[in-house]
Amino acid sequence: MIFEAADFVFEPPRQIAFARRVLVKPSARCSAPHPVTTSRQTLGAIIAGIRKISSADIIFLERSDGTEPMRSVYRELGYDFPRTMLLDVDQCVPVAIENPLPKPFALPTFWVPNVILSCDFLITVAPLKTVSGRGDLSIRNLLGLLPVNKYTREMKMPTGLEQGIGIESVIADLYFTLPFDLGVIDARKRLISETDSLHGESTEYGKIFVGTPYEVDKEASEATGVQTGYLKLIEQARAEQRRSVDSYGNQQG
Image 1 (cartoon, one colour):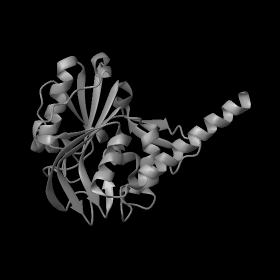
Image 2 (image 1 turned 45 degrees about the vertical axis):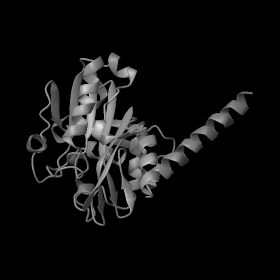
Image 3 (image 1 turned 135 degrees about the horizontal axis):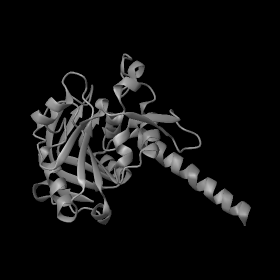
Image 4 (image 1 turned 90 degrees about the vertical axis):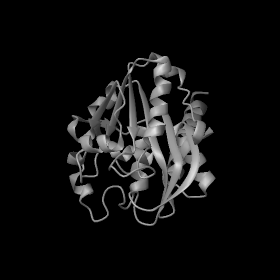
């Protein structure tokens, strides 16, 4: 669903009422303002909505781009919400999670912070970005959950993990390995860049997209007329899963 940003009120899914821990993954790799990062205004609306129906722990989890500590980034962005925990991906204990796809696109296993496994509801909240003509949205935001110390070689590649060859495949694998419950695209403004997700031209957009991560990324991609490569791979994997189920059903029948 698409909402007007000016009067956005977050209506939390019913499942949150039964959650003990809610994980919020913002896009907050540096202290640059929205739309480089997720706006404090949108995060505040999400927290207010959660608090209407739940007293669950709310955990923010992000990884710094390396130039400043995560605690400083949170402070500079004004993420000082009451009754929330602000955690650094690289200070959490990493655990290995197996990719459930029978034929992974790139990686059969991912290292992720252990705190994710203790959370009952997962939300990814990303700005609306177009980088080199491609969508950089709520599912791509999950790359920030990968700890640097487990991906040191990839991070030091000339193009880095997030810009390297095959990154669309990695994002698609991560989508299936870490199935987030909700995606929010904070499109109060839109960032358009030819180089990377931290620099570019900011324009007013005035919308908020809310739904499953796949739904919001597809809707935002269509609304802005950009290609988002990992969505095609996700669709491909889903089609393969359907074929496998149909084949199994025919064999049983």
